[in-house]
Length: 537
Image 1 (cartoon, rainbow, N blue to C red):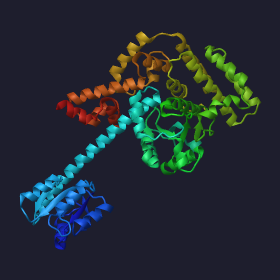
Image 2 (image 1 turned 120 degrees about the vertical axis):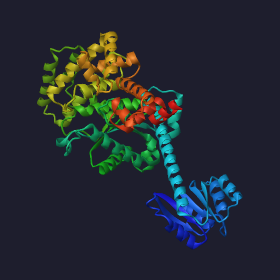
Image 3 (image 1 turned 90 degrees about the vertical axis):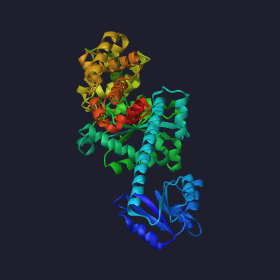
Image 4 (image 1 turned 90 degrees about the horizontal axis):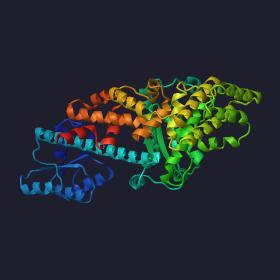
């Protein structure tokens, strides 16, 4: 409803205007009335309105004087309509000078007032749409700059744009926030079965994070991971947040997490990266948050933490009751791609665990140590390897069921697949023919639900290694390559057809209109509708 202020020194005029039309039916509500300009100013100091209808001749302060004052002193940007019994154009000229929308002669006729209100509604709708489009573009532009810092590929412009929106006092951490959908047995509730369910809950959590952060909302970013299976929200935590809340770091994050869960009624988890001293080092904190996240897949059933800190995993080697000898032998066999020894060494590890009567938490610590060493081993094989894609391999390829949690069978399968992955990193050069076939297949099937795993199976190549080839050959990740191609196809449809945005979205392989529009803005610099208008202009 648009809020209206009526200003006239004659009570029967105010009453007549109130009764002349059905204001609510037309989308308006009379927020207040005033007998002169001074009363109107006093009202505007306390209440925001969208439309002011004022008589031109009033004691104390005229309608023109009221209009001049609110415009010159920036008191209100409401639409302004002048009422007058005078037809002198000089009044109209002065009113127009101060952005008066219309000038109505008394007595006011219903049809004339209706016509003016229709103009106000139409212009208000256009203005709101323009503001929303500008805000959406600004947010998408900021997200692009922040993601450049998160990925470690940024320049001074990216850094300046981020600093212009974010306060970065003290130490900084990247925190990955995700829905914990491990299922009924662990969380006491049913899992989220569909992508739509997860997306809807992700948006709810993101919106509540923005509400909690208030003016620090720029510190929250939607959809950072390039893994299409992840429904993540990034929080750029800075030390001042806890300090100004009168808490320490742990208390602040506990409170933040509990507040989200009370609202969403669904478990949420956090993966906390290393603290860095400057926002320019954010990629290091993001990298370590991803490692903390990957450990979650190895936790024993029911032992997953609500807040997982990278530092706790990093110092696992220093903890007692590690079956270090068995672990190191298994790591060596994986590195050497010794498929004959791997199953026996996994059995040996579990025998050591059982012999020492380790509880579930200590089993989890042993698996965490193993994972930590394997992640860094891949980077030692190839200094150009992208760590996020290693973690995607671990989370997405070896553990599709999500039921690793210390299981012997899954550990054997993971170790053998990871050994293959390391072997391919070391020496196979299949970039040419396979990448040509893969790129052609994407061009023919881009609207389908393509994944690296499916492509890897089709072309008999480890999917994680295929992801590395994409980065080396195309300069972008598989997800970005697919997204860029889809957006280019969408742009072509915008230019050459009259299909609506949602129809184009579906034709190029997207299923969420907001997500499609945000991706389009990020690549093309404007909304799809604006892109089409510009091309036709």
